Structures are given as C-alpha cells and as structure tokens.
Length: 295
Image (tube, rainbow, N blue to C red; front, top):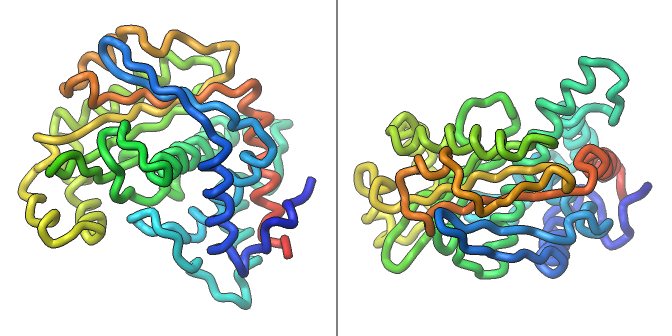
C-alpha cells in the first residue's frame, strides 16, 4: 500500500486536502429520501480506493487543524522542520500504531476510540462535501462547523454547525455513532444525546462554540445571534455507521427520533453502510500513517 503520487506530502498539506476534497465532491454520491418523521441521506461509493485515500488525507488535515471553522483550507499549524514527525505522532495517538487487535485491549481500542473517531471525522467530511456541492438540504446552507474532537471520550456534542436558511441563522447539532452491528441502538443513543439540546442541557456548550463560529458571519448576521437563538431555528443530525448486512429501514418511525422537538424536515438521519467497516477503517488508518512520510 502507498499514497498516490497525486499527493505531495505533509509539507504541501494545504494543496493535498484541496485535491482530496475535489475528489470526494466528484466521486461521493448520495440519495436524499423524505419520510414521514424525518429525511435521510444515503451515501454511495465510499469504498472506492480513491475515496478512501482522500478520506485519509482529509482526516490528516483535520488533525493538523488545517481546516478552519468556516471550512476554508488554511496552512497547517506545524513547524516545517518537524511536520512529518509531529503529524505522525498525533495520528498514532488517535488511531494507534497499527491495526493489531490480537488482544481484548487492542480490539476495545478500535471499537471505542479508533473507529468512533474515524466515523466522527467522516461525518464532518460529509458535511464539508455537502457545502462544497452547495446543497442546502441539511438544515440549511452550512456556514461553519466546530472542529473534529481529538478526544472521542469528550462528552460534548460531536458536531455543532451554523447554517443559513432564508434570513435566519440556525444551529445544526450532530451526534455520531459507529455501532457496526446495532444501527437501531445507534439511532436511539444519538437521538438521546441530541434531546439534551431540547432540554437546554447543552446551552452552555453551544454558547461556548458560538464565540468562534460567529466570526464566520457578517456583522448583520452576528446581530441576529441574540440569546438562545437556536431555540427558534435548529436542526438535528444523528449520524450512524453500520455494516451493510445490518442495514435497517432508515425511514422507519422511531420513538427516539420523534421525541426530538423539531419538525421532520429539521431531522436528517445520516446513515453510512459499508461492507466491512473494520476493513475499510483499517485501510484509512494505514493510509493516514503512511502520509506523514510521503514525498
């Protein structure tokens, strides 16, 4: 396995992630389906080798803080003299030194940390590609998002984004669950976490994120962010990942989703099914570890 010669290596990470995003925008396809209580997006072609490689590059860029809140690509925050070493160290800390799962401890690491982090990163990526394609079906037109958490055990929301719809600014709250064989449980647990926004438990967290997300807005738009403005305009994004053989009816009327106190068009289920999640995430992980030494 090796990184394609189309990519130049970490010294040129800005150009590489721009290339990766252009490939993802061209090759990832999706179908949007409207159901009675929600709508859902089904993505295809994510097992394509070029797509897996582009995902790996995007995740390396996310680790390097190469992607700003408004989803613009900026220069990575690394010293050019040590970028390869520092980036590799950060990658290994998040996804492990290899794909070994020969012990219960290593298998648990992949279940609860590596795979969870990769899926959270892919969920952010799909939002990014959605913005690139100028699609306004996830809440509204995405303006900015929080960064991908570098600690999957952080109890905060996995995704907080600002979107524009008509003349309003809203908050998109997302929660990501990679339960390989239990998609129904994943939907339930993600929805339960999002319900905390309805119950005001997450107000402090959302307000804290607004301190830097609001800088992506115009002065007029900033003026509309008074109080808990998300009470009037918000959307929810449960993002779940499972193996293809465990796929369920995504449009089914689920009690956990109906509890979310927004209209159906403000609930977007983001399911991703892969033939073998572990295998595909192993490929992404290998490519991520190779990238820092790619020239």
